[in-house]
Image 1 (cartoon, one colour):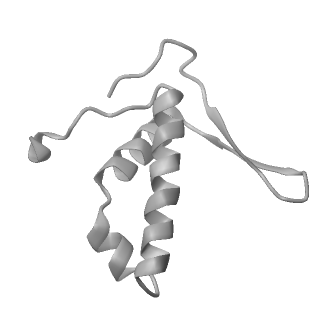
Image 2: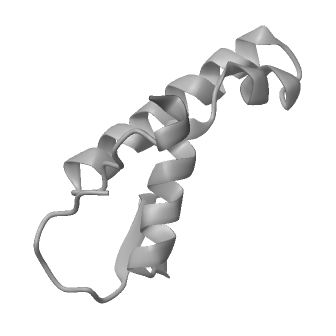
Image 3: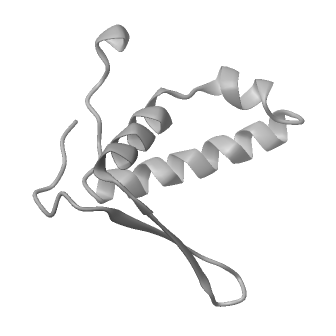
Length: 85
């Protein structure tokens, strides 16, 4: 997995909520790496089998695509796994 150079310390994951506040959690580099790999690996089967219907599955996929983009822009972009090559 490629990462931008920087501190090996924890990364703060922050979500802004509609009321104007923020919710944050510290993630280790290992947790961020695992999250990036998971987001890359998860697919339609998981979306459709764990949601109420196809509309919700599409929404989950869109949300995870956005999360993957944020992770990539933050320097967390895993290479393809050996099994996927």
